[in-house]
Length: 193
Ligand code: ADP
Image 1 (cartoon, rainbow, N blue to C red):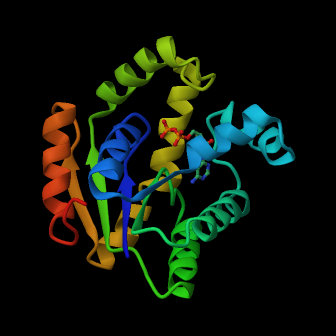
Image 2 (image 1 turned 60 degrees about the vertical axis):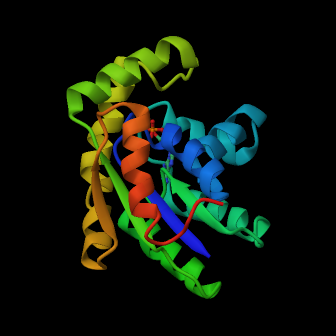
Image 3 (image 1 turned 180 degrees about the horizontal axis):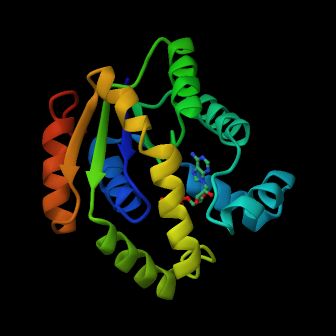
């Protein structure tokens, strides 16, 4: 198995790059944002609870997302590997993920961190809001999400750095050029399927 985390602030391109990586390397893509939005749309109890946090640009409580990830990993038991997108976002989530994967005799192999200047992030998210219809892509909530990222999520990078798994990648080149750089890192572990 090969397990990859795509890391970076909101708007850094994790979702866009994940979908190309997933196709090239035949990995299962798990995006906590997508999973949560799915629950919100279906108005499940989890979705109703999560929406309160998402609409304010705050992180959903750890136990909610960890439970969701755990069932998704079980559901895709035969996978070649996983791309985690938007998870882990806190140190507690990172530790829980290690335990979940250890239980399956595997682990995280590589963490690719997309680095994009803040003014570019805001520009991209505001533009996405015009077309995506996402209720959290408006300027007030965007500012809160970025704040939440620096307060709780950025430190997750040091956790993986200490374990020798972090690679920082410039994320404000073109989509294609960024993919090429990411692929070079992944190819050290796994060749395209
Ligand atoms: P972005 O990366 O653009 O912020 P996501 O789709 O990854 O968007 O996440 C949208 C929202 O979903 C977040 O602002 C947060 O409220 C919630 N969320 C997603 N992933 C997590 C997570 N791992 N832990 C807590 N909350 C999360």
